[in-house]
Length: 478
Image 1 (cartoon, helix red, strand yellow):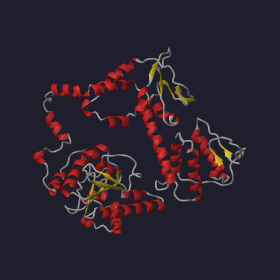
Image 2: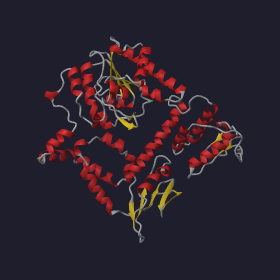
Image 3: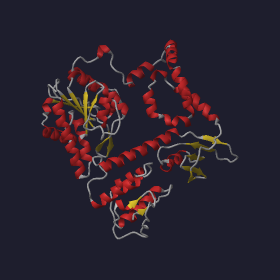
Image 4: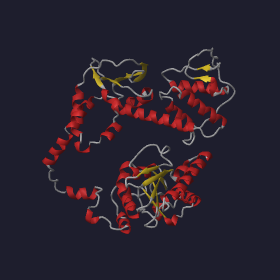
């Protein structure tokens, strides 16, 4: 006999949390619980009426992760979360870590939910409803992939607090009226009236379309086709794509207008322009000297100096990190701070001589936020990585390493142009934008951020193993 648990469609997280706390307080094992709520062939046990004597203690990170995973559409999400709770309570491994199969599964579920909420915020299209009241009223139809209407509605409450609106989905309907958000059962798509503002939006969308930058894969990645049927602007896309080539020709024929007086000086001062062919550095030393005066993005304004790469100009192995840290910014050398010490220790364990390795970063200036006397590291943006990629490209062109190691997601993006979770890419070799092999691994700072000793040791072993493999792959004759 098992305990059959049926959770409501609304307030699901609070209901799961309350039920899970009651079950684990009686030390009821995961295999004794059926979270689908089905009775099956045999009678189910009744749930305990009250909490038992055992009090489970879990880290705050588990509750945050569970608060996201719970909205996934996977039927096993409740059981998977309870397995993690059971293991955390019993101290069995690190069930939240990316290196643990259970932790990996939970993090993938949470990321899918986050993406679905993001898509809802981007692709909900409201239509105005007629009404006699003083408050304007709007309605929208959306088909989320997961059960994300409830956690995603707070965004619309904050943004449209002075309006009445509803968002209908097949499973649930959110209605915001008189300043109160309520949820009701879902159903089929309602018959929504035409909205005059859609024509204005379509006109705007058509006019901002750039036919010279048609990248269908990138467009579908940002606006998946499964959402197109509910977006009024997508009906324009086939026609705009068909006319793209002719429109580009018309733009070329029209030419450009002369800038207003003084615009050239302002543009020269602020734009991050790529040097023209006569100004291209001819050697690695010339590239370094040019980078010292880099003004390609705003990071140069606060950083102490440009931190250029270091190592022999003919190194067979190049290791690329994210950006300089506080120590590197002050000393002007890469990997001299705490993360650099971790890397150099790992290199020594892997048998790599730093003197025979070219060490550099994807971004050459330290990005930080001041906090008192401290400078707190901040992750560089895509644009900052893109602006600095030119300098990294020069290093790759002059050094010509047989293998490049990307430490962390920023370095992987700079070298390969590809984004995505780092865990499934770690330890694998990808082709870089320079057409050379790129081995992806953890950044040393990832190890320093791990509070759990087992997770930190596992990540360190991964890093050392990747560096050993890099040593083998870049050896001459391989």
